[in-house]
Length: 504
Image (cartoon, rainbow, N blue to C red):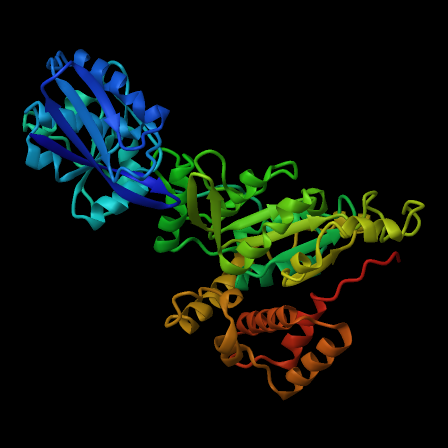
């Protein structure tokens, strides 16, 4: 008789159901696993055998065959240990067949039978809920999986606990969701002295999810400003928190099963490789752009990143998804992030100050910023010069407005956008609007339209640049609480689009 258990295989953030079939047949004693297992899955037979021995369960002198179906899907990871053990226990008539068939399980077995936490419990719980099954996982992974309310989660400390639960000897209480973590970073906008225009640009970027590039000499406060962006953004909505946590679950970044309502802030170093940024590696894991989904991706020293890495950002910025294609895997990850980048105007950093610039100015600036291609530069909605802070500004008292006050205005603007896009599921902020929808919500009044047409003609705005100005102008109107995009909104949006790189 063939027993059946179920688990999952991960393809991006999607957990695909895998049926684990176990058959005992006469013949030379052997234990084989088929169905395209990788090395970790093939080694499960030794861990399962040792764990059963620790439970004083002897394997019969028969041929044990475990099939992972569908057989043409690659199976990777140590989380197949527990479902293989449960299918085998059902084949041995230790666990009821019908009970095991109603579970989705995942977990790594130690040689003594204890269960080791694994990645991906949250996506697995989503799949189990969709199929109306119970999820069985290591106790340490239970708090993470329990965030899916529609799925009962059984968190067992070891294999014996799972056996006793399903045989009715000692029932395990369903796992409870982990805590909601808040990031007490304490980074407040009041800490920034001066730079009022830069603060205004941060507010606009946060309100409409507009990509921001800050250019300025070393020490002008670009990184300090960027680090305060998360404090201006509204908390993640429940659906956004679940989306983001599923990606972090696959990356093993969830802390003790807790889900954070704070938007992620990722700041990879400029030496990061392409797989680290966009995703990849042997198992096509999510990269930094996906880990920043629904949050902020900060790229400091932007021109220092490899050209190939920067160019791979162009398509994800537009589509909000990235397809990681490898020889053995083609997976898609969401990556709808707010890109904040900082750069010095040249290698020496003092191009804007003629008294301190190197002897190659202004050519050094053109060469340095030339590392950023025109198509990528065109994708920044806001381009801002951040001048050095005057010493007199450093002695000023803290600003009257901090992150809390700015965040309140950002939240109101986001609420207006949520109401506007309630019938457009693909749009969450003004940065997502395009086509006819953008024309409906962001067409300025006559004076603003005339100004935009003149600017587009004089400064050679691309069609993409034209539409990005409209989106920023719409956000400026939302911050003011007005329905019509005015000429002043268009003028301010254009001022963040036109940046010169000439020495003073």
